[in-house]
Length: 132
Image (cartoon, rainbow, N blue to C red; front, side, top):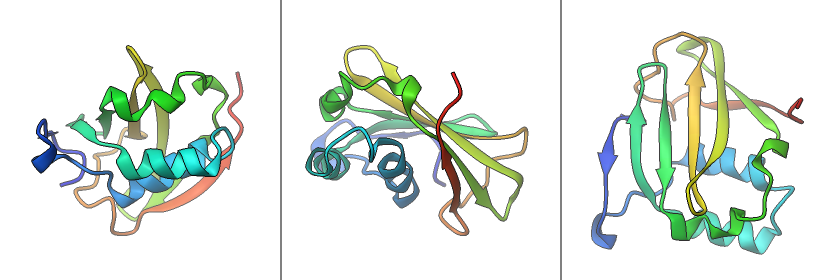
């Protein structure tokens, strides 16, 4: 199940980005990173773990894969809102800094149980500038 707790510390069992994580990161960062840096980050991004919360999950990335975000003001990124057949009210995402250039991508529902299979029926609904 995407969003359940996974661990992958050695390169041989590294956890790669799921297609929906890749899509959301591309939309979030497409206007702040040059295309070459963005694609390199997406290709090399390694997930340290995914923590399931019941109403979403947190995807934590290895620090060395996120160094290109060091100078990005994540508060200025667009808000990504999506649809999924199992979520009546859809879902949202948030990208946050963790320590020395580490990052966490959060997927959350609006008080609904998180679907076991996000990939089936995943659809990005909107990418709008965040109101700060």
